[in-house]
Image 1 (cartoon, one colour):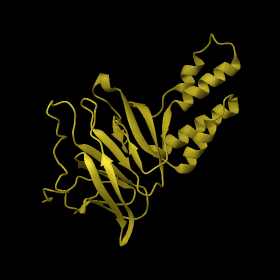
Image 2 (tube, helix red, strand yellow):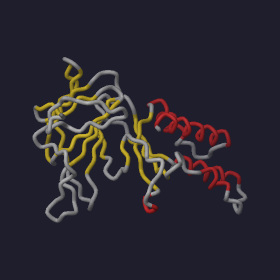
Image 3 (cartoon, one colour):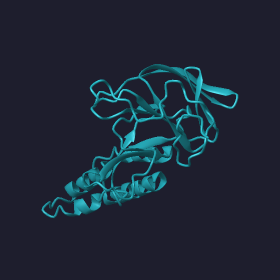
Image 4 (tube, one colour):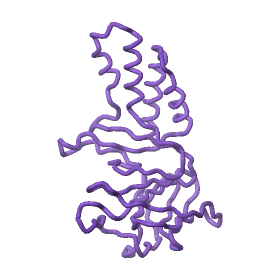
Length: 239
């Protein structure tokens, strides 16, 4: 039987953990404030993109053990918390982070913590059954535009708008993202929820290539093809 105070661990490949839950972490759904609309507790996703098992201690207690290529989600109250990250006997991080509660109705404040900073992240909009928007198809509908360079600029901008690179760093506020470190569902039952936002990893070399291509102001056909191929590669690595 699982310990009743076990931290829930959700990952690309889920694995059990024997870490006791922090006294303040919750297994139930997020507690709402007195008005019943604004979530008070905070979700912290801890992503381990490295090759070592990471032990996450919060305020002096073991909160999660995260295997390589997996992640864990903690549910914590707002306020300052001390995070200590260790790999075996090696202590890698020891710092205090202030967690701020959500100010959005019905939306839980969500952070992503990437201790080793070995990967970058992308945010993109996903429609059920599709991995990428049809930017090139939309651009081809501009039949009324006779200027080839304007068409190329439009197409290029549509491609760049498919994803948003998250800035490099260890901590990120990802509040409002529907699917964090998980692929959107293949089918969405509610018609009102066919468009979802998702966050996934991006290899640093691909992120750097995208940042370089995003500086091009007057793209050529070769630039458009290179960007389209790069986005295909990014999504193939992410999903």
